[in-house]
Image 1 (cartoon, rainbow, N blue to C red):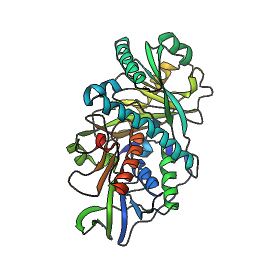
Image 2: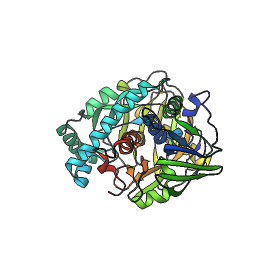
Image 3: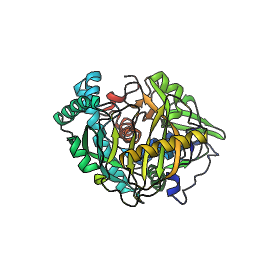
Image 4: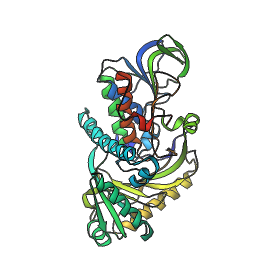
Length: 399
C-alpha cells in the first residue's frame, strides 16, 4: 500500500540519511521490531538503553512511510475532547489517558534533547478555536473539564484572539505543554542513535510470522529466519486487516509546506493552531519561517495518486492560511497527500496480542500518532522487561 504521494517537505531538510543492509542470514534476538517508521524508531531507541539484543527490520527504507508525511505537531489534546472521553469511558480513564499524553510530550522532549543531532524540537502552546459560534459551548465544556483536572489551559474571547493572533474567531482554548518537531529528522536520528547503541537495523527485509520454537517466535525472511523472544509490530497504517478487526479505519489527508514567510507577525509564540470543525484545518510554523498546514480529510483509504488533485488541495490549504493571515507573502512549496489511521474510540492500540504471548503492537492510530508512539514505546518496554505497566489497560488491544 502506498502511504503518500506528492512532493514531501521533510525529506528535503536532510542532505543524506544512513543506509542499512538487507538481512541475508538467519539470526536470533531478544526483541524483533517490525517496521522502521516513527513507532519503530521510538521503540528501538527506548529499548536500546537496556541489555536486550534488539533487531529492527523494515520492508522498504526506514522513515519512508507515513513518518515522512507526518506534520510534526505534538499535542496532549486529542481529536476527541476530554469531556467527550469522560462521557464515553468514564472520568478516571479519560483523565488518566490525557495525563498519559501530556507526560508523553515531556518524554518526547527528553528523548529529542538526548539525541546526537538537533531535530527541530520546540515546545509550543496550542490555540484551539471555535470554527463557528455553535462550537463555543463545546469549548466552554472542554475548558471546564481541562481546568478542573489540572491541565494547563486558558479561555480566550473573540477580542483576545484577534489581539494576540490577528484573526477573528468567536472563542478559543490556549493550552500549554505541546510541541513541534521535524518528524523525518527525528525518526532518522532516533534510528541512527539506536544503531550506535547496538540495535541491528535491516532495510528491504520483509518478514512473515511463523511457528514457535520453545521460547522463540520464528519469523521468516526471503533469506532465512529471525528467532525472537519478543516481537513488536510497529507497522503503522499498513496493519489494516488486523486494525479493522480491532476497530479502526484508514482515511486520507492533505498537507502543504509554504515558502518562508519574512515575518510571522501576529502569530503569538508560533503556537500550533487548529479548530473544532471536522475534518479540521491545522497549521504550525517551521524553524525557517515556513507554514505547514493540513486538513481536507477524505473517507478514502489509498493516498491520492492524482497530482492535479494534490495541487488543487494544496491551493485550498494555502487559501485557508491566507484567510487567517492575508498579509503573509507565500506560495506552496510542497504539497502531498497521505493515508492515516483512526480508531473507532479515539485511543491507540498498544500492548500484547490478546491470544499470542510475547507478540506486541504499537499502533498509534489517531491524530496524535507520534505522542501515541512514545506512549507505546514506554508501555511495551515495561511489558517486555517487567510484564506490566500501570496504564496498559486503557490502550490494550482487547479493550
